[in-house]
Amino acid sequence: MHPETDTPVTQQILLSADLPDQTPKLPPALPCSVPVGVPDVKGPAPAASSASQTLLATLQTVLPAILPWDAAVSPVPARRILVAVSGGADSVALLRGLHALLPQRNLQLCVGHFDHRLRADSADDACWVQELSRKLGLDCLLGQAEQTAGSEESARAQRYAFLLAAARQMGCSSVAVAHTADDQAETVLHHLLRGTGLRGLSGMPEQRELASDMALIRPCLQVRRSLLRQALEEWKQEFREDSTNASPQYTRNRIRHSLLPILRDEVNPQVDGALLRLAWQAGDAQSAVEWMARSILDRLSLTADAEAVRFNRREFVSVPVAIVREFICLLWREQGWPRQALGADHIQTLVKMIQQGTPRRHSLPGRLMACCRQRVMEIRRAP
Image (cartoon, rainbow, N blue to C red; front, side, top):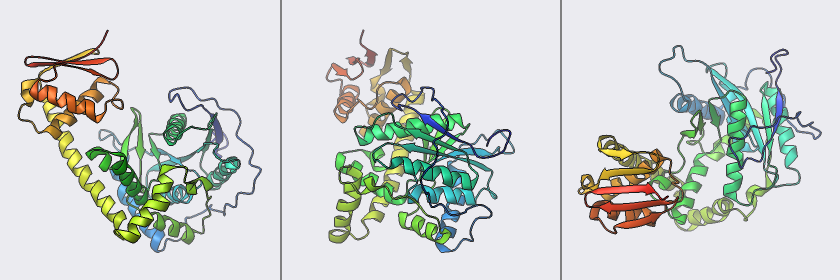
């Protein structure tokens, strides 16, 4: 809100998004020159019926568990959330659901929209989201890529860099995205086909750290996409359709529109539910493995600095391999070493060095070198 007029504010962030920590530039907001077709949403929320009631009940249950809060502060201060809104059905349903809870929950909302510039008319989506935000009485930040991303991974990095910068600009502690149970099933299948471990099979968490000062939350991760569409129908709320969501150019679209329908028709009509159960069970198993690896790290007599780590590898002689693997991943995160570059083959070699003492030396990504010297395992950065 504008501090003097108490009216919603829209700002545009122009940001390359390849550098998450850069300071965003804030020129005047884009003028909205297209008809947006947003119904009047001022006043009390529409009366909830079946689908919308289920959505609101789910959000009521999930939010307390995934919102960051400080147990030492009482009463709990209002949590300010940046809601990522593309204009599509899922994100609009999340926004309307959270907005409906404002009278009951100690929440403050603002909206973030990022234009990837993948379509000639993508700026229309920004105008539409801007107008929806205005009618809801919410501040809105618009971001735009300086150049079109070359891959899905690059586009995702651009989007999250903008959301982090926008959330910080608006004083938020959380960014809410509208991933659904259907997205979760697609993610697990994608990870499975690409090759993954327990963590990948766990899919997306309901809450994770986006940065040291920011949480990423997924309040709709237990909700099916069809229910969100039904809720929008009950609220008579329009949304935007993104033509790129049907393009076979993107792996997720091929999984959603081609592979999963074949699996439902020819293998298992309940394949989505099976993938979701796999994610829950893998998540439980991963939590147990992480707990055991953390216990070892906490009690291990370990010498560490920014350049090297040394420990007694005899401590791991009878430890299950899965726990040793997780210990290695945990050690990499604690040291701030390049975890993404550490592949499965590297991890397996490190397991052999820790438990069997062979090979004696092994070169690792990030100019790191692992060495075995009798009982001592040393991993150090090469000069």
